[in-house]
Image (cartoon, helix red, strand yellow):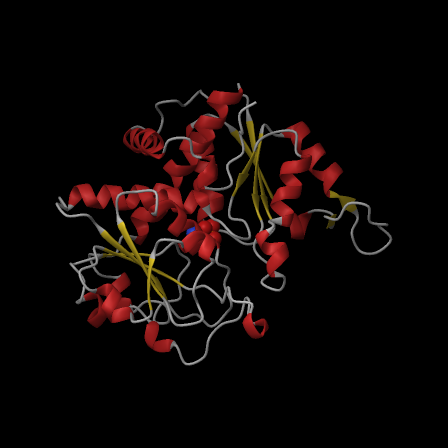
Length: 326
Ligand code: CP
């Protein structure tokens, strides 16, 4: 049986084909408005969300699906993720029953579960997502997991393709993923995924980050990594700003933020070094920490287009699962 889950770039059989499907949905969102009639999408959130929640719901509605949403931590029983546990402490329901029961009500299950940033091994084993995949009886899609955010990355690719065409870029586009400051420790899911997807396009990808903030080499193998942000920005066509905490396990600094790195903010002076680059960020973003107002408010900011494209990345994923399964 084909893999019907969607948790990473590895689940995309043909990116160019998927881009075409998504572009067609963008042109005509209701072209398949009855395709998912009678099918139900369940969206389970272990962590907060604005875009993923609403864009995935909108995508399902465009296909005629019903949608059920649950904030698992607030509204559900505390779920036990370990097998074989004597459940005489705080957890009230085992993932085996929880995932099995949700599968009785839903035809596809979406799960959002962030990294702990406390246990690198558990995060990179995707413990929670993998438990859902193991015990669910229906396809599972990632709404951002510990190490990946494929729905976001697919929307990012759609946005890059759209603006490459709009600006008539004749050269190979240069995309810079720039680490940017943040007061809290954030997971590596968005940048990991972004690297994984952009690597599989014809763009040149450069990662700019402070020393100590290199991403997992499994993702960045073959990608240029630069520690001088200004150098990286030169001649760039797209600047993708994102903070992430340390991947390193040296001195137990996995999941930690850096000190005195405020100067990594994306500001107008740095954007002037680029080839009139578009500014990208997955949002939510902390203004004047990650990016200066004058950049995110400029005509070159495409953050709303990225958020808009989240609908069509999700619609394409749901469409492909429905097409294969039913
Ligand atoms: N970019 C993104 O996933 O946004 P939310 O966290 O609001 O869903």
